[in-house]
Length: 161
Image (cartoon, rainbow, N blue to C red):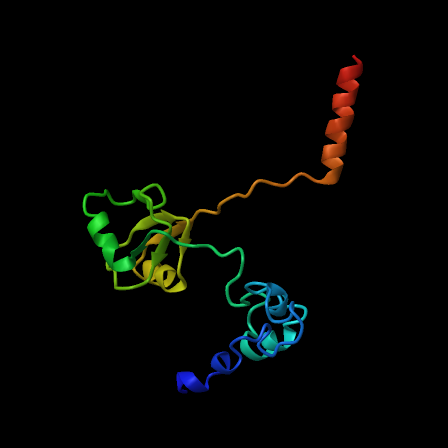
């Protein structure tokens, strides 16, 4: 559009440029808030149309997921077990590995100890004649209300003595 045809040129000298009284279309109240303000209130129709996934959570990403930071494949185990004696248990958890994965093949029978392992890795180790011990991480038991109450009674009894 040519500059000479723009509204601002036609309205030059007008106080409000066609927006009524002085306060209208001047301050931030006409915006309805900054950012994502009002997405659950007066901007709900915008939310439904343009941002339908804004609220809620991703059902496919569970909040308590277990992340493996360091893993090892079955094919890499023969290099690790090069200097081991027969029947000696290889503790992969103490070596810093979180999980054993099943990529590759293994021909030697190994005894392993690891926190987690995939199904295919377990099958391949057992097919080669080895054994696998999976360490269960023990979570500390949370105290119940009853145990806290009993502790408080014991503390109160000790205070009386």
